[in-house]
Image (cartoon, rainbow, N blue to C red; front, top):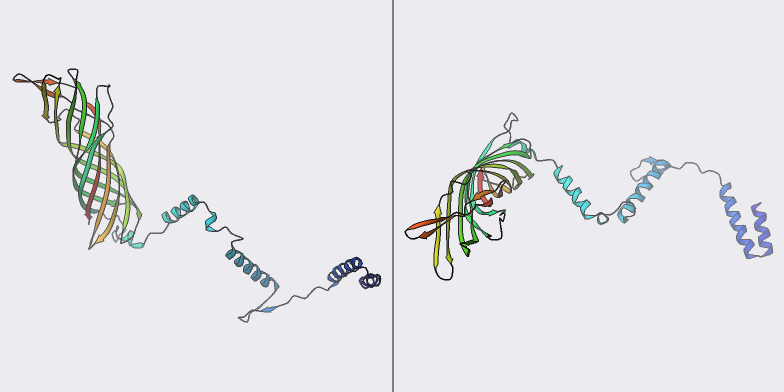
Length: 328
């Protein structure tokens, strides 16, 4: 039938009929072609595979080619940076720790091994959180530079998590420039507060990076402070345009609360030095409640000193500490 169609189309010499005849002939020949027998192929290794395995190999080759061309799976550049950051953070936090990170903090029986150390450094303190009482007062605070030193011990709970407790002596305080009206005369006062504490922090310690070269950790917790020493000094002048009257104060602050409750957090780096571990640590302390600090002054009146008793100023201790130390 297909041959008759082709002959008729050819005898009429019509290009259109010849085109359709060839299409029909091609279709019929395709349908009438007998089914091909399953073939086999020999791969370079000499293993004979059938058509199903050939199809699988062809599919894998196609997927690999498209994978290289970026047509099947999205490229890394197609992901949002935040998604990539979260994936990297999850991979980092779930990465297995080296075996020595566990063995070094535990004894042969698998029990946590307590480690000790000491640290010392610079404390930069000031007072924060002034609550203005009225428009007659203006307070500007500057820092007091002091020291901090103490001992600590670390109790590991897991490979990354532990508890760190300390006994540390830290110097706190500030210098305040206070503008106040005394006897209805505007006066500028220079006030210095010095408070030294023995603090006992209890903090959670988490190791973000565990490696025998550099360990990176963070700290967070609370501390109980006991005031061991305090000092209050004030100096200024009252100038009414006629007379200049000096005002002074130099006393302790026994009226200030002896206890202080502190929130503390920090970051640290550790690395081995011989058989010990050397550390750099930054810490920040902030009192939970304000302390009522004095502002009274004495004015000379003849041979006596007249007390000018002002209300105390509510201020909170805060300090930044940079310390170095050794852990054994």
